[in-house]
Image (cartoon, rainbow, N blue to C red; front, side, top):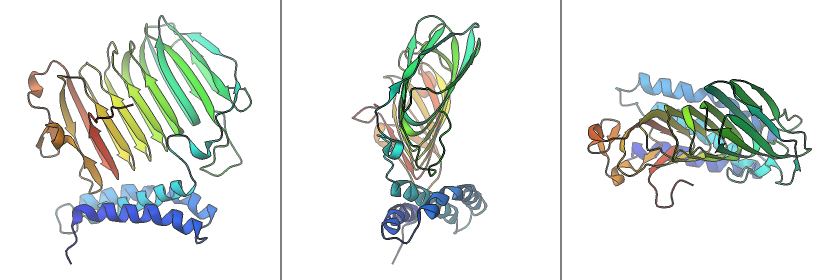
Length: 326
């Protein structure tokens, strides 16, 4: 029997992802044991290191297997808790009490916006001027922790205690409007929730996104300017509508899926990793491969040049999918 190494990692990942929920249901694994599966994440780094050491040997696949097995165990533990990355799952119900609206104004030409949502729904839009506005609801109507100054806004979910690592207790619903009159660096973290960032009209530096067991769409259509993006997915899904501006950045998917929608005529240069459990459809979209880089023909002469590192470990990237990036 001949085993194709290209599918070996996928097989290990899928077997463990399915086996963990089955073992929990059958009573072979306890809740406490499942919760501790997330502490295995350092094995991902070990696997990457092993892969680098063995890269020029016939055992070069072994590091990828360590990464695949670890991600399979972690995602299997997540799925065994019934978390749905779209609806929020054990995050609680959508019902909540409106909290008091918060408003503020940025005093300079630049500002930072830092958002961290644990369980719930986040919507970010753009308004005129230099002021921001936050409204929404949560379980008791108290609202998130908010700190602001002339040059910064920080919004974080209040501490949740008493549950397991997967049980966040209740849902928050935040709706934030940021101004178009200030150049913004935005840093968003969504844990077990959904996000929708519609940033049309904004002037942006770097947009960062950390997505853990959730789904988010980021629409950069119509931004006035942007330097780049830095996205990281762990058991999550993201849809990114790219801008009609040249930019650089990175998207890394660990047990996640990313969809990229590029504007017509944009030149793309997409760099990929070498994981055996990664999938890219760039060849089907007319990009030309050179080593681990896929490039749109005529990239050097394109008015809009988008250069991204798109790396997946147990994940996938789809370019200009038929169903869009919503």
